[in-house]
Length: 617
Image 1 (tube, rainbow, N blue to C red):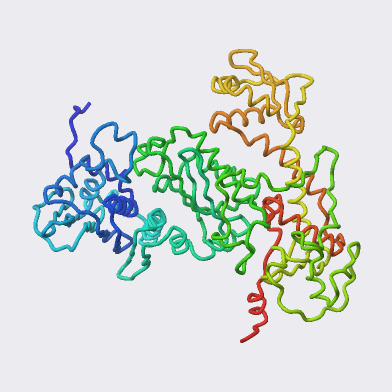
Image 2 (cartoon, rainbow, N blue to C red; image 1 turned 90 degrees about the vertical axis):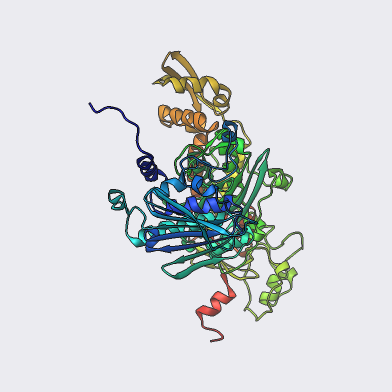
């Protein structure tokens, strides 16, 4: 057996490079984070060959003194932490002091830096880990780091790099993430001599539009919630906007650092569970800020994963914040643009959930036998207490008082002037029914097209959920208790969350060191697979501190009942009934999509309709 011997510094750095500098995009990330830690206001990135031939990052940060240059390329040398206690509250993006050393070991590396107030700059070149002499250099301010021929001296590693197009795509995505995280910083990106992006320092709203595009900002809903030392801000897009958005808009930042965290991802999936259709993915750009002592960022070589001190509190906070944004009723949104979703500036979620608690709400008392909800037809011809709407008088040339509330047979339409926005609710007033399937309505923006069955299905579903939530979950004793083999962790979870399980309608008893007896289930889920249901609930309680499993399964039953209770296609509605449906849609949470995540309505603006008919061309 060979003798144990220490590795050389060069070999250590090359091994570390395999973890820290997995590909050019990883090196770009480390260099950009160093620029931001140096408080740069302007950062320029120059790439060639997807970052494999050349990768250069220049900034106007505070720079380095001459004596700091050799230490910058030494392993585990850094100015960002000094003592073990600093690891408990890391406030910088970089802190390990091994990134530059790893890059210098596998590239032709050049470091030029000028400290603020210094007479001139200094340059240090490193080729394949061999450090050269420090020489004077010309640089206006800050630091410029250049990596040429990445992995030139480790061909085994270089062959794992992908095509230039693939490596460039990864670099571009890394650049976007950093630019989103720090909107106040100006960024410039060039590739193969061509300018790709030039983003001046801006507000977060402007940077989101720069990076993610106008379609995302037009469709997104603004989130701004706070609790204790937690704050979540950003934007989530309703699933019905998915076809118009760029692909894979999924950005989550923790204290300015892009992360992929299992706690956060699970919370977001739970928040979107009731509105997401099929295989569609959530679209969001969110920033979570918390005390640096509440998160450990030193758990992954590339720092893309974190560990929260109180992961259950983070999970609840993120899920509830996003759920509220997605549940915002149509009536509380502004209908703008040529899509059905409002712009995010008009669409802010209140910081405190009690802000809407005092609003009048209509509840339907749920009983298992209830299968339908009727449409109230005495209210639809009025809006916000203004009395009978003058809309139909202007549209059909009749006086408002002549409108029949019980039936409506409109006379021949007459030309009318554009309706004032204050006279018309967000989804407008019904004017016709198409093939007994769709409702046509006119609002200030133009034409609203509504799938009446999908819309009524969501209304009924939300009412049933509200009614069910107001009642404690009743238990159904099992005639013969079900025995299940349980792990030690499951046994401990039952003991720790006994009160929560009872509130959910479960009665579980330990009948052995690793055996549970299931004696009661929630009454609405009495026909469910008892063992599978209990395992899922216990898993959620252990991982997240609460569970949506019971709600999800209960909601599946309510959704089925709501589908059967909603008005069917080809059912003829009167104008008052159509308007009642529109008003209920405006008040219903998640009214923009049905129980299966499909859209319930769509807005056609007058400009879009004019374009179809080439008016003015």
